[in-house]
Amino acid sequence: MRGIAAQVVELASAAAADRGAPLTSLRADGGLTRSALLMQTQADLLQRPVEVSALPDATALGVGAAARLGRFPGLALREAVPEWKPSAVYEPRISAAEAETRLARFRTEVAALLARPGATTAGGGAG
Image (cartoon, rainbow, N blue to C red; front, side, top):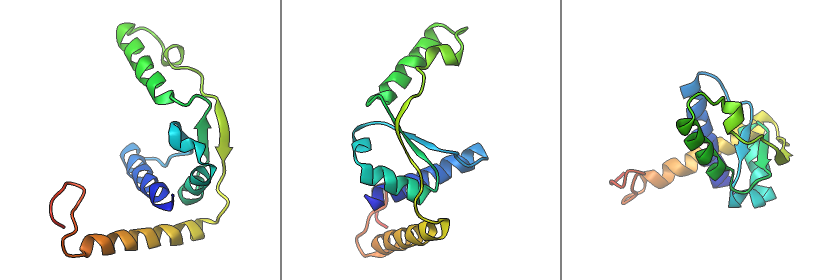
């Protein structure tokens, strides 16, 4: 669970860098949101609230909203997107220092794995 949560933190950091501003919260949907342990770990490592969708397939609704906006260009975003209603909100329970310690450990372990002979990178090539 920690590995998944740590990877999401890395993605959230990249998204924040692209946006030029940090995320204020993370909205989650899908099957993994049934794991309270994962959602709490995510909030802890991200140091932001994690809002779990009341609708298990919110991503599909987002795709439908995008299609609706394409079909009706004058439609306001608020009219095309269903109202967000979280079924649960997980708040961080550990300190920022503890979260950074755990993330540093994760990064060290990933670097060690990638440095091993025969390790492959995400692109599929040899490390």
